[in-house]
Length: 116
Image (tube, rainbow, N blue to C red):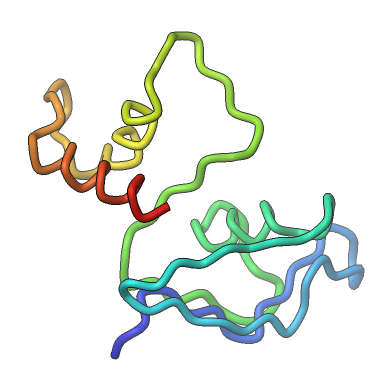
């Protein structure tokens, strides 16, 4: 089975040689759920930014075969969106500009919410 996400010997630091994480290895296959747990300031969000390509790893590599989205813990919106609306925003790449989500988009998001 091909992995959707693969992290190989990943390492990152903001201060020279003070690694937040190093030699990190894991893979995520289709149908699996991944949780990244740890104390504050240990590099969870930084790892996510590296996985999305916002930050470049200092060591190792990220291989992705799928699109994914990241919703930070502290997230505030200016309008009263439902949970489903927020999850649908994660499908923005699949929905045409100025279009409404399709029935299939809504079904996919409801299935994702149900699985979590």
